[in-house]
Image (cartoon, rainbow, N blue to C red; front, side):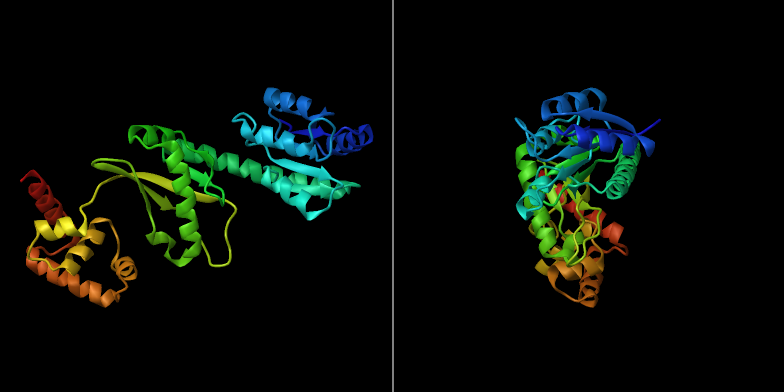
Length: 306
């Protein structure tokens, strides 16, 4: 099946030139001469890509793109701006309203075809990845750099609803969480978001690797159900033979952290963390981390009942 491209331009000569070139390249070509028609065609046919003129009468390309990205039917369609406006503010505006790239007029047809081919390939790969993630039944979100949700697997909405998470608050919290991660990319694997109420909580786990000085345009995050673990204070009360520091270490053990992770969080050496755990094992009469966690969880539950 041919990939389809919608060309939006109010100048017939540009439409003719692009139509002929892209048709010869093997694409199904659709045309619109204004933003209103472009929005209607995009909703009805859902082309694989849109080449959009930035300067058009009545509704310009920027407003057209804004409306396309606001609709769940067309928000996924990649938009490449065509513009004679080379000022930085216009280029930035194109990206701000959701464009993935831009070409300047007069058009270089070889450049247009190369950019179209590249972005169609990226869109196709992303679509395949979404289908694979949907099939796994995992709760995965893709966020932009502002923490806004670009797409999500179906189970995300179900989890948020079941855990009574306020979606608006969730969105603003995502933004703050991401900013914290970007400030400390080397600590990103330690900083988890926590949402929900009661015994079951939702935890955000970062799937995209962050590097200092290099940030991906999109960030993948997994949302997981997690039983609420006892705090260090609750552990200290339920297990009074543990010191406050040992209770703090055990809190992070119940959260699934490794000794190295705990050392980073508490600003200790891994060796010191290991010594604390040796003392915990002795005091709780256990030999493994799993047994220690089970002992602590049971003690905390008994404390709560009492």
